[in-house]
Amino acid sequence: MVASTSEDEAKPVSNAEFSDIEQWFLLDGNRFAIAVILAVAFGLTYLALASSGLAPLADSTPLIYAFSALLTGNFTLITVVVSINQLLLSQELESPGQLEDEIEQTANYREEIESVTNRTAPAEPSGFLRLVVESARRDAQRLGGATVDAVPDGGRGELDEIVTDLTDEFDHIDGLVEESDEGIFNTLSTTLETNFAHEIQRLEEWRG
Image 1: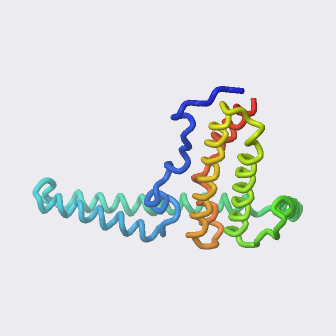
Image 2: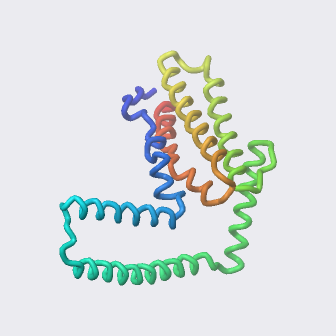
């Protein structure tokens, strides 16, 4: 049995990657609202600097040039964004055979989840994710309970720590999904801050 890892290595980092404000600003927030907030913050900052004399507006010509450059840059950026969107859209326009394969893979995965959980998988993305999380949490707790008598005392503490970390992570995901709506984007954004690679590696090392 491999010795337990250090406390710094064992500490999961997925929960600390994004705070609620950072996730809203980078992923979930309304882009128009964020743009307005940034514009107002920039304007108020410049107004405060100009009023305090740190950045006096002696000549408006440079300011006009700056705004002209910003407008020109925005038009260029819009063109680039539209081009990228068209490229991504072209990737999604697949042939009927490819779409049929994806549908079959999705149906097979849903059947696999239903066979494991003994429940009908919900059609909503959030409900489906919560079902998967609930099943994974139950399996993790079953792992901790099934090895009570089979694991020596030296490795029992590490296994309990791994199971606790997994359970806390599953509870965190379930809470985020419950607070969000049933949209696909909000469900996917919830899973972006999850990472079980560390726990899987610790289980592999513990099993070895």
